[in-house]
Image (tube, rainbow, N blue to C red; front, side, top):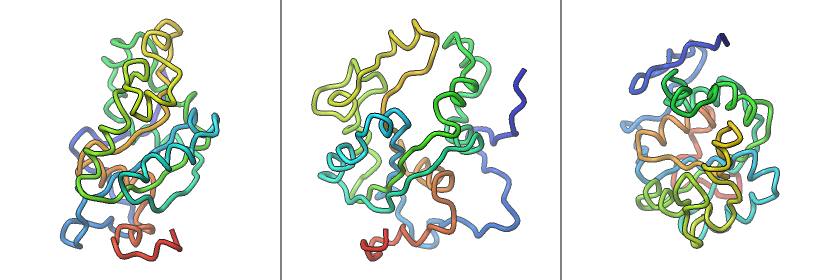
Length: 197
């Protein structure tokens, strides 16, 4: 059995880091429903699609805070905490935690922020469904995706689907904490100087 760090249960907050500055809150004026965290996954980076995907998204929202990151186990397990329950591995027929490690840990991703009215909902619609083979040609996954749930399941692995964007305002705040952290909260100011992002 793989031992992994304790993670927050869905709906709970992680234990605070005593040396960390608190993440921005609604009281500080962050309108989370106008932001989305964009995660361009290792398959997107490896295939050289980062600029093309961000250009497509940039037609619908302002893109800022682009940065490359090497994924840690803590980040990816926090990001996919809802998939770490044993019943999910049973349902998928594979060890989800092990496959998340294979897909992400030590690999490069690109993260960015999308800003604009109803950004989470707009970007979720634009990226298309989880399975690229079912996504419309006008979506990111439909245009650039090459995998399918059928193929992934037959090979005993998780799907490669290029991109994640935050589902809703509550998830944006969580995703921001995972991929940016409190030291980058200045990016959440709509009037921030774009030349420094």
